[in-house]
Image (cartoon, rainbow over all chains, first blue to last red; front, side):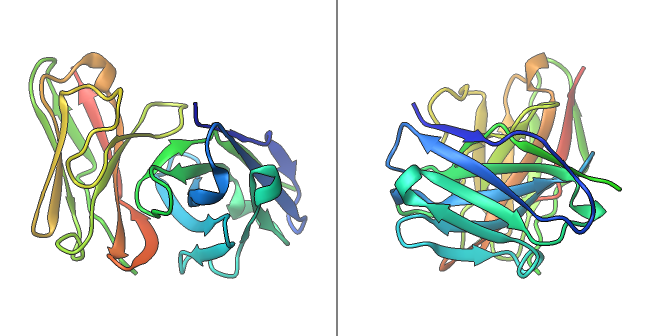
Length: 121
Length: 109
């Protein structure tokens, strides 16, 4: 069974750094693209970026380029999303999701449970 | 940047058919997917590659695409289908930069 388990909720202050994680199991992690999706309170889904753990090929939405860093460690089947300097507007639920088929960056078929990030002074 | 436009809301009576549209200029050249998100839960893929249904998704969910519009149809809507629905696609067939639609709240009553 494919599972993506995300790290727990975080409460941070503006200006702090943060790295959240997404651990995959039940499939060949390095062969499936992993994407990150933001959902701000009461708002819709926003596609942030995607990484192929096999070679760390990473693509970003223009809206998030330079704002976050997506990475992956295929040796431990884990993808990451990180910030160097959080803002209050980063408060949101962040989901990771894996591709439906190996090598394909299309449909995100399997989703993590989400990580709530709260940024407040 | 590329955008996918959906109606904000759709209402349907139980047992009737709900149709949700998604408009985007690149849809003739790329695929569309649809996600269901119930309150407080992670999204669930209900349709991929315009019209394919993942295992475990009820047959009442179907998808189609023509020109610049993709459509999700819920035939015989159930109360448990009440949720937010998002279309998803990429801005080109060769570029994996994704985009979600604006979302549609489906009310079944």
